[in-house]
Length: 144
Image 1 (cartoon, rainbow, N blue to C red):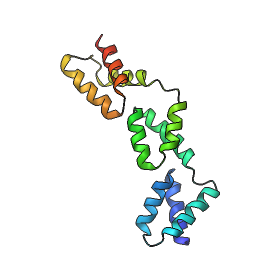
Image 2: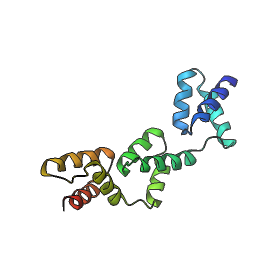
Image 3: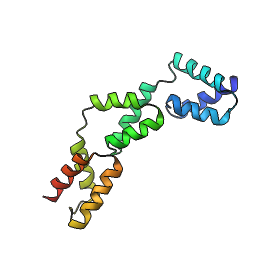
Image 4: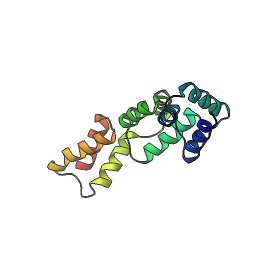
């Protein structure tokens, strides 16, 4: 258990991790000690060294500042095991996704949109995780 504890502290010292991420990393290094890994994670949580809600807030801010939309944020949060926390943050956030999409399109296509680049802009924003109504708003606003 000591080596699992030390490894988990090393992992957490680099950056915040969700429980699922931490469990996956520890399971790769210690595949036979699953019950010990659970005990270590509980101990980390009891000491306040690991918190899914804290991780979710930091990760959410990082994703929005990188220009990611709500669809992509939800999808990646599901993989990280923090979907419920992210859904709460998305409900309470004051991000204007329409303006965020418009800002990204203006930065990506500073010369404006032509008929050919509209499809590129749509794919770009779709990949970034914006919903179709936000994408339409941005494309229509910059095309005018």
